[in-house]
Length: 245
Image 1 (tube, rainbow, N blue to C red):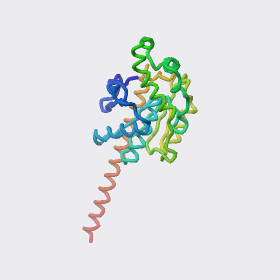
Image 2 (tube, rainbow, N blue to C red):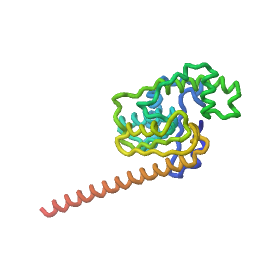
Image 3 (cartoon, rainbow, N blue to C red):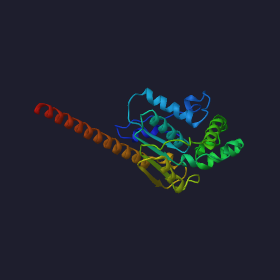
Image 4 (cartoon, one colour):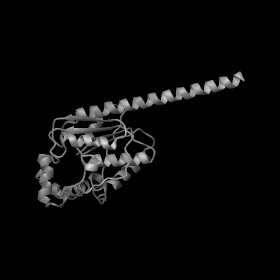
């Protein structure tokens, strides 16, 4: 799964930063992370090095949990993201469970293949299979053994959850439960397709994320301008009062 093609579809004023997990891609030589919280802490640390910015987080499936935990870390640090977008995933308190990561290599490979997570022309490549199986098993194990912090505070940022109607892993009711992590604005949107449909044709998804991100940024700017105007008005009133004395 790659987000490389997303950059060209985003508006000019929205940048794209794709996360590469330990043990994946050009980090293949690194040991896999030990848990979702560890992965989220790493992502948040990288974001801090990039300086002040308005971050909107997106994750699909297992990546939704990483994005959620990253949003929690940023909120705890007083640097909340602009929004959290999640796709094809159960809400944190309903995530986890399953024994796929305990299965044989054949069973695990077949399960990922049936979901559409591996391109058909690559699925029969034995060298690719040997390379990817340990990474896939690790990711699935982290997903199936995930348990959220029971004392986690709700997110103050808007949360939007996406659902693909033919997804065998996540139904509309499960996606709607993401409302439990949001203190404020929460919304959902659905499209036809299976678990990995977003990767096959992401145009509408990218457009929706972009539109909401721009709208939230505009709302925040308007709120700042209104606050500054109010402060200026109060300061002028104070000066006039002092002059009248």
